[in-house]
Length: 114
Length: 113
Image 1: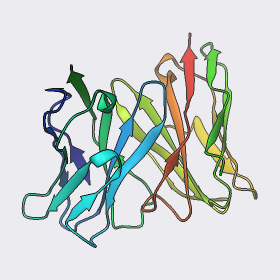
Image 2 (image 1 turned 45 degrees about the vertical axis):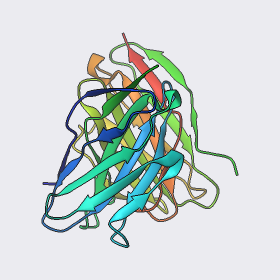
Image 3 (image 1 turned 90 degrees about the vertical axis):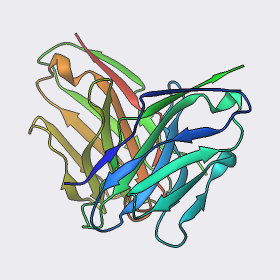
Image 4 (image 1 turned 30 degrees about the vertical axis):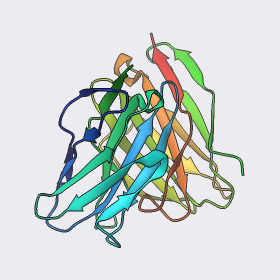
């Protein structure tokens, strides 16, 4: 079965520092991959998605992610953290088996220190 | 364009009761998915509907059911509530399904006492 692993339930960075949130997936066939962000008391918002068009995917709010098939990874980065980036981030996969669902990782809470 | 709306936003029920949650998708979206979010289990897929047909259901007991109407609005029902059903229930809509960009509603916070 497909699975998604997010390393680190909490990541803390200083404002202006690099943000790196890790995501690995298990699949022999590259699935569709997504990063979502959830702010307190809100639903999820799509940051970016990979659909095999390009390995480096740019999203909203300055985030980007690189698909690496050899490492089965899809890590999320942002060059310079802002206080407003503090939120919970979820990596998700949609299997290529017409299962019509998203499988989410356990989430990483990003803390941004002033 | 209006976003995904979920009603009610908050619910308090007691064990054994049943509850119905509603989701109105973005206009033109035909796919509606439901997810349960808890601190212990994270985000788990409940079911997905497209044009009134359930295309997939997650690993939840039969107490969890749903449906979609011809206007794409969807409801989910939980019967015989248990304490463990306390969660944030999220609805998401998209044009064709979960591989599209999914737009999530704010969720319904269900508390079972």
